[in-house]
Length: 239
Ligand SMILES: Nc1ncnc2c1ncn2[C@@H]1O[C@H](COP(=O)(O)OP(=O)(O)OP(=O)(O)O)[C@@H](O)[C@H]1O
Ligand SMILES: [Mg+2]
View 1 (cartoon, rainbow, N blue to C red):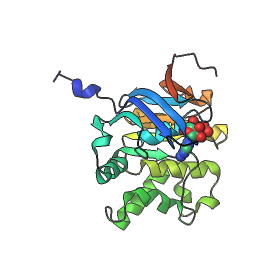
View 2: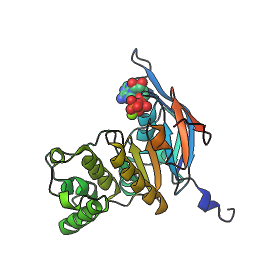
View 3: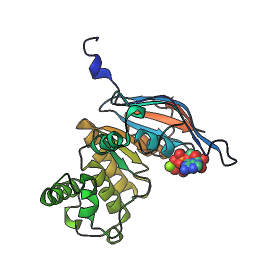
View 4: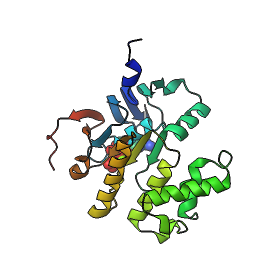
């Protein structure tokens, strides 16, 4: 092996990734075409593009929530198609934090219990679950709201609960699908500052947004159109 080669293995590497929904039927949609994406450890990238261009589809594949119709995805050098369901679940749990478009919080649970969810009932003892969830909520500025249910929180606060939940297992990759879409610009800036802090701590951050001002915070910008992904040259994206 070339000395230092292990250091350049991308955390996210897709090769010719494609996704067709309902293939062969009348409802067939080609959502991703031949996507080659390589993201290094500690990079903060933004993916832009119009509604329906395939951003969430790509995010779901990177997050191992769905399987591609074509191509390969290497997560930290591992071809995820070689993993069985259990190994895939472990990879998702340990390596990937997902902030969904919309928040996907459980309405009957407190903020604390929502954040503690990914810790798994069996793996982490109850006292430690609560302690870690409380610390994660404090880290996103919600230490005073741990017992609130989602409908007792503002949109920005719910978004921050979703981010705390995504970070609870200290994943190396944070995937965020329109995390600032529902927020006013000041709260959005706070979330972006949080992502930059995570990047500085060595996390790899992939952020989906249709807002060029938001994307401008990233180190790199890619644009999707009609299922294809292109690298945007610096300064090319209008703000
Ligand atoms: N489960 C599905 N079954 C069939 N078609 C789907 C499915 N999910 C998405 N699509 C289609 O695939 C295309 C890409 O959808 P996707 O959700 O990836 O877009 P997006 O870029 O995230 O859009 P938005 O900005 O509106 O969130 C769209 O045309 C959509 O209608
Ligand atoms: Mg989407």
